[in-house]
Image (cartoon, rainbow, N blue to C red):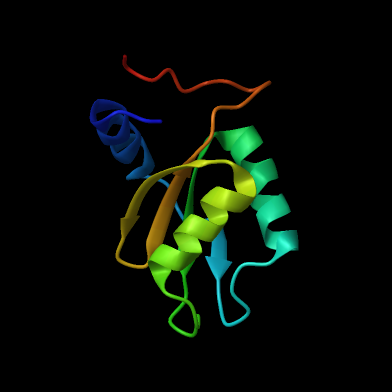
Length: 97
């Protein structure tokens, strides 16, 4: 689990990122979760935006993504979800303790 200090640190890092995935009408599917998992392995920190035509609640989408990818939920802000997962091979982000 991430501490408050670590979440603040990750939020500041995520601020400049652009969303690389969009969840739309179809919601979250297995294919999307695999792609997100691969992106997390490469980048560690990503943003996912939720389109207005998405049928699911943004918090539901966030918890589904966390469950399917094993990532940590950093933040849900507006229609954007910030996810973090420590990379096994490309570790670049050093979290404060």
